[in-house]
Length: 213
Image 1 (cartoon, rainbow, N blue to C red):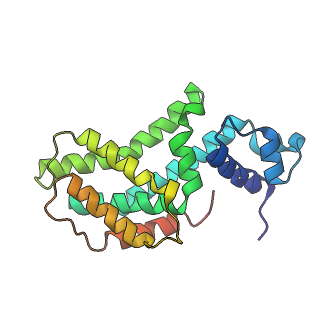
Image 2: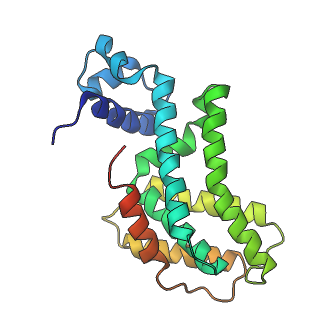
């Protein structure tokens, strides 16, 4: 099925913002990539900042939905963290352009637009923070600086968007499982194995990202 003009603009923007950055992408770049004239481009995108904010809002909204669905009913904080890690890795490896835009271009937004995006990001990261805090309270995790460890984990998992290739020697499910184990070790968990965490995360990711941005 052919993409609509608006979909072509959004897809072109995601690719260009990921590769060249928001400030490095010009209106002519967007128009050429979307196969539209510069004059007609604004009809489908509004301002360039509105386009960027929309991409970020959509991506963060899907991450939030994924975290909510994947962790629902998971009482064990170790398994919940493993699911969150797998979800993050699978999303960043499967949607590298969208997630790189979210991770790298927040600074390009005006204060008003940034406030909304940062609120969504903080809401997503709260799932990680509360899981780690609960794990420490219950004796499942042992960490003196949980906030720092949480940021380190998020940075580690987000990095797969920059280097992962399906042509590499390690399959994506195995990579997500390995990262989940690393996360549990970083938090001093004695049990590094969480069967089914990757499968649960993959099911959610396939649903949340069924429709591309």
